[in-house]
Image (tube, rainbow, N blue to C red):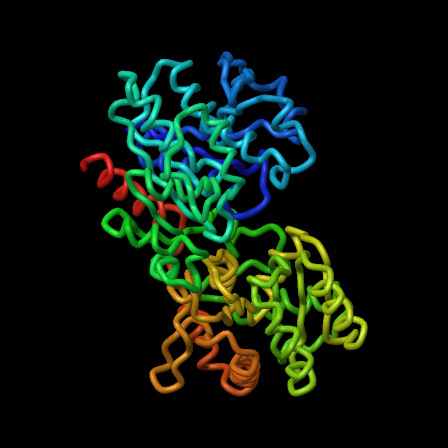
Length: 474
């Protein structure tokens, strides 16, 4: 099987979020499973220093409205995966990946460039795996223009929706850029919508967790595309993301003071906690819970709930708190305020520090993820791998992966609350902190359960391989 993974970002070359990690991880796993998978992505400004190490493949002329633009193609192999870069300085040699007035033209060019690449190399692909709105017009272009050509006649498309909130919505007149007659396949609320086009025209659609797949069919989570998604229900799936167990492995992680595994972790986690508390100049007791937050500081992540409850939770408990993240300024300032007021018990790092994040996962007892919505979430998967119990709101992938503690059966791998409600978050947080302090035997059972979960890339890859075969056999 030949698969072309189409993504507007791909780690380690470009990254603004989880899509980049998926574009790195899934093709790698598919190749290990015996399928040829290549990644095609724009050549952004930050990648140019590596350009002289890439192989030049060729170029194609692409017409957008009445203008002609050149797409130059370069290739490299990283981690056993072939990466193809689409170069056009006008469109992609910019400081940021997204957020420009001409994003419609930029990513229409990229979508054309994906299909033109296949013509350039004269080798057909069985499946184009497209991701989010930036690749959304590929199935439409395939249907309307390219499928008339022999090498495109049997090509199938899979759309993965990583976050439905971002849709690529532009003024209606932008359809003229395509150079084809007007079509309602891409029109949504009288605007050109890249994601709507992909939903209507891809052979199959999936989201990054089974619960998120159900949620996006409702008005609250559907961001106005719930109707379109419901119309494709017979070709709609949810598959959980996975994490790279080579990168996130407490037995081999060089960032840690003391490595550990799911059989021996109690003393090692305390050693890691002591080293981190010392490093951050926090109160040195390892017998009280350490609560972490690692992630974007955005409304989606439930920071509003944290702003309402955290100061009370600090006052009513002996726990310590460490925050790593950046985003909205008023959230950043709130976490700075907590650090200034509770210097012995709160540490705030604005930004991201990979080493510190690994050390915090390995040291912390609880990870806060009270998200308003969460398509999949990787933080809770990493936390469980390191014996840090996630405290989540029951939404999307968080609901699929975190089983709340049951004090009667002793089952569970974390803690959860159902409603987007600050009082519920506070109560569950205080209960979890108390459990850590007063019931170490139950806590150990929860940690063992969390560390024994399988959310590996291999597990995810097998699910996608099954879906690929299902799509191709239709």
